Structure formats: structure tokens, C-alpha cells
Image 1 (cartoon, rainbow, N blue to C red):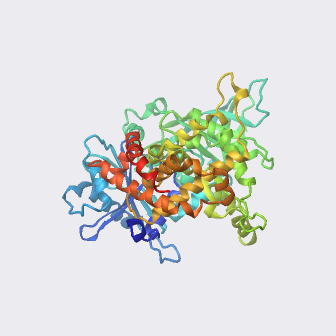
Image 2: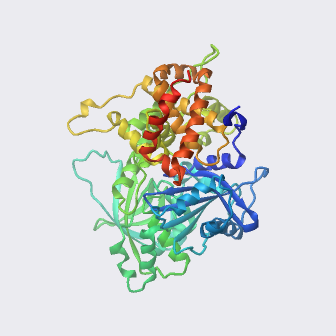
Image 3: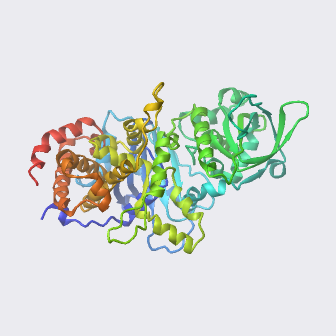
Length: 587
């Protein structure tokens, strides 16, 4: 009996909890699960990831009680203690006695790699309790590296899943709540315009103090439509914002140094001046800061720490979206406008391509097919279910929560079972691994999505002078995309039997890629869709490839971190050169 067959296929509750919470975050790199706990040393690290672009190490802590029926409150003290457990590992790892076979050794190899530069340490705590105060968890930095703590509790998850419902209903009465309105200038539209009155635009400035007070009351709800929502003041840009606000000599230059915010709203009490284009904004409905979330969070931090913001002003652009709420394409029009505002206004920080490209024709077509194409019935009855493609994070839960509890939600779950939920970055990683790029999938969702969109640019990207060449995504191509997902999930189920805590995802991607390379001609994607599965005759083949993959990654990495090694094209080249002939003899 080989190593795979000895192990149980059941994922641990803590790893399942991690994976569930990650579905609500669009992280550039998938964390590696390690489950390292030393109670005698007060040290804990449950997962980690490293972002090469930002030189940022992320350490994850699971605060999970699987037997808790009703969420309990978690205190700031407890959260700080949890964060310090991870920080303690980072500062003391070289002196901790560890079994060389423990998956945490891969993280230690990463930390000992002189070519790896770490400029930021982010500690993320996932909790199935709720953090009532929502105050920032402030811990001292270590080794001179900026250290940040983020908390994802059940309330924050709820905010993500209900954001589209709640944000549109927010009404902020600046005059009544804060005794302060602000003036903007109306931007006249060209006489010959194609906007059809779908928006009004205003520019000017808002008091930093008023912005901070609004954020203090409404918090993350104001940035839920921001492509980098739930941001804390971190990184060099935000450090510069804080430093400028704290320096009395530079404070007046804030409006010069900072690019300000771009926001949208559905409506508002906006009083026009009869003699000029000036208007006074008394209240706004559905106000959302779609660009400048980090500026807002940094200003709020300064405000909470007692910095005087009374003479500080922030550049502001406000767009009132006048889209008919009951029109069939209102939501698509609004999402498209918000996406473009975010894309063109942003100059401060990197924006995820998966966010910016969510409204492309290709993504919209995938969403359309997933809502209309039924899964073939396997028992000669009529089809009852469909795959659900999530074009935007949390879309499934938003759709579910729009329906009344009871019969309506039950029918929705029957038509769109959660087992058939698929987001855009997982689609990309599954596609790239089947097409022979497991090293790209190993780099994480953002890199895989970028390559996936480039691979399929003929379905969405207009080239100058070639508009007629743009291809239409067909139902059969949609089914083949889902078939690749089905195959990846089959491989994942088998690889889960390895019981890996470290680089399970890498083994899945490399196993899938090798399966296609060696036996792809014998696997029909259309048949895989029709049967909604891969024949059991491939189980032993997949097991053998997975075992070979696991051994190769471990052995070939040497002193390198296995996860980092798996991201390199050379790893994939070595793997198929060394193992392809060996694996051709399985069948």
C-alpha cells in the first residue's frame, strides 16, 4: 500500500476553515497550510504566503472553535496575544527545535534564503468569533520590519457577503450628523454626449476631518466597492500619508501631495448655486469610495490618534450614477462604471487584474452561461442544477441573501449548489494547470488570472483595427472550461488523501498538468462535462502521478522552499523531462 492509500482523505477542520475564509478574500498568493503550534513557547503559525511583488510575508492564525454553536465575542487582548504568537515565531524561529519533516521547515527555508527580501510582515487572524470594537491591533515591529495585523471575524465575512445590499442603502447626512456640508463644482457635460444622463460629476475638496468622521461611523461599508477594500494604513504610501499629517509644517501640503479620493453615489441632497457651478453637498445615498480607500483609512488612523485635521483638505471627485434601478442591465452598467473609475483613477497602489477585468465581455459571457446552462442529468431525469460562476467576490452569497429565507433560498441552493460554486481565480488556476502551466498556477490567483486572460484574449480584448476578429464565447467552449475544473477537482480529491499540510496545491497543479501531457489525448473534455466527472479508470493513474509529483517536488527542491521552487518554469521543465517516460507506462 503506497503513501497515498495510507492517509485519510479528510481535510482537518482547521484547514477547511482556512479555505472557507479565503473564498472571501482575493489574495494574490494561496497560503500554504502548516499548522505549527508550540504552546510551551507561546508560538503559533497555521499558514503562510509570500508576495514577491510586495516583499511581504503573510502569517495566518486560525482562531477556530468547531464546537461553538453561537459566535462569541473576542477581545482586543486575545487578538493581540494571537498576533504575538506569530510574531514570536518570526523573531525566534532559528532557535526553535523542529522536526526536519514538519511542513514548517519550508517556511524556515524561505526565511533563511538570502535572495528573499522581506520588507513587510502581515499577520492575519481568521476567527469564527466577532470583534466588537473593531479597533486596530497594534503590536510592535520586529527585526525593524513593518508589522501589520488584520482581523477577519464573522462580522467582516458578513459585510463582504452583504455589501452590495447594504452599501446602496447607506444614507449619510453630513449636515445633520456632523454639522458640516462640503462644496464641490459641477462639471458640465459636453453638448453632444453619449452618457444619456446616466451620471453627474462633481470635483473639489472635502475636509479631512469630515471624511474621518464619516469613516469612523460607517467604517468599511464606505469602501466595499473599492477594488482594494478593507484596507488598513500600511506600506510606504500610507506611511507617507501618516507622516505628512503628523508634521505641522507639511500638513498644509497634503492636498498637493495626495491624489485624493474618487467616489460614487446613487443620489443625494445637493444644493445648486444660481450664480455658479458650485454646489453644496448636504447628504449622499449609497456613497462609496471606489478609489482612495487607503488614503481614507490613513486619515482615519491619524484622526483616531489625535492628529488635528481641521485645516487639512482632500481632493474629491464625486459621480452620481443615475442608472434606472429596475432596468435589466442597471447592475452591469453600474459595475462597469465603478470598475473603470477605479482603474483610471488609481495611481497609488497595485490593483488586482482579476478585479479590473471582472467586467470584460469574456467574464460577463461566462457568468451568462453559468446562469443558463444546465448540468446534464445522470439519471435520465430533468436537469436541476447549474454551475455558478462568481464574477465578483461574494456574488453567490449576495444572490442567495436577496431571496427570502425558506423556500426561495432552498430553491436557489438546489439550482446552484455550493459544490458547483466557482470563482474567477480558481477557474484561471485550473485552466492553466491543465494547459501545461502548473508553475503559473502555483504563483497564485492573480498571476494565473493574468495569464488566463492573455491566453483567451481573443474573446474579450479589442486590438486596434481588429474588432471584427473578436471571438464569441460559445456554450461548448464554456462546457470545456468547466470540464477542466472538474478534472482539477478530481485530482484534488485524490491528492487530499496525501494528508499534506504544506504544498498540496502545487501537487494538484503539477499532477493535473502531467495527466494532460501524458494522457490528454485520451481524455475528452466534452465527455467530462456530460458525465460531470472523470472516469474512475483514471484514479490509479492520478494516484501514481501524484505520488511521483510529491517525491519530485520534495527531492528536486533541495534547500529551496518547495512552494517557491514550484513557481519556477524550470521546475516544470525538469519534472516533465525526468518523469514523462516513467509515467507513460502506467496504462
